[in-house]
Amino acid sequence: EDTPLVSRRFVNIEHPERGDITKLSSKIRVLQWNILSQSLGESVDNFVACPESALEWRRRRQQLSEEIVRYQPDIICLQEVDHFNYFQKTLSTQGFKGIFFPKPDSPCIYIKDNNGPDGCAIFYKEDRFDLIRSENRILEVWTVQSNQVGVLAILKELESGQELCVATTHLKARSGALLSTLRNEQGKDLLDFVQANAEQRPVILCGDFNAEPIEPIYSTVLGHDLLRLGSAYRYPSGQEPAYTTWKIREEGEVRQSIDYIFYSEEHFQVDALLQFPDGEEIGEGRVPSFRYPSDHFSLVCDLTLVRTNENET
Ligand code: NDP
Ligand code: CA
Image (cartoon, rainbow, N blue to C red; front, side, top):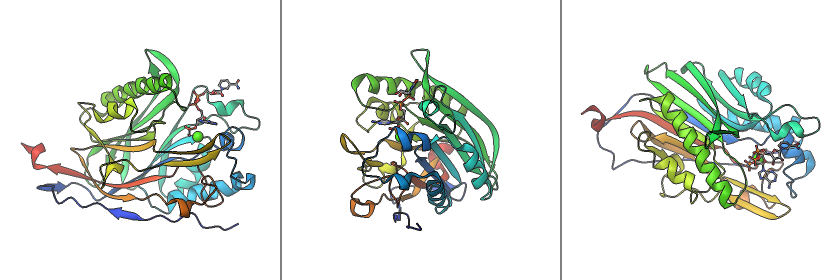
């Protein structure tokens, strides 16, 4: 019953090439995670190597909270949240406040005994940030609303007085050329939404983009000429990790890198990244399992707000 969670380590990132910078804040630890909706996980996903009892909500909720709290994040972005009230209650005892926006036609609501629609949530540490305002968006594809959403918070860091924009999303799932085009269109709408609200503020954009780095949406995000985003997990190798999700369905094993933490490169420096457990540590049945409560791993990074000499001139 009290099986420990899979073990993971942080690596520190060195920046020898970086010239004169002024640190505007202490580190901001960001946690990004598709937590696996309880309704979908129990009935739609069909994780054939995962024992049913590992998916019981009472067990899972304990492990979900533990995985979040043990890394002591300052900002949390979650997808597939179909128990927002639970997280709001639990995380408030740890000093967090949260916002939530459900998908307009969540597949969860068609499942027997569901707990409501799933959606995206942002939590922030109240002793570090004030919420200036929050915004929600139903992502549009060629001006038509889709079933995917974006959630955004303008936060003010109390220590520095600096405002920043945090946004999260969960793009359309499944593979195929048409769906990859759809994700790219959803992503463009999301970037417009972020740009319009962030204005000149530093940006942190996290999510389950359901797209590997070869998909158009990845280049669309990194190529945005105003936001100028980088991907935190490209450090230190220059490449995205081999996987952020690793599961076994009836059709076989699925091992993909589809979750990201993007940040505006002129405003932040990446100082540490939480590594993913290796295959042996994860175990043969992959995840979810008795040792990990979602089919996606959490992404955790330390970002520091910086001012470069370049910005000043
Ligand atoms: P998505 O395609 O975005 O997927 C919804 C969820 O399914 C995601 O959370 C996704 O997780 C998960 N998923 C992805 N691949 C698989 C897989 N192979 N097996 C099981 N689950 C998977 O759906 P939409 O939000 O666009 O909603 C459309 C869906 O809603 C339809 O597919 C339909 O099933 C359902 N629906 C049902 C209705 C009904 O009457 N029964 C009516 C309307 C909708 P992840 O992102 O982690 O991959
Ligand atoms: Ca899922």
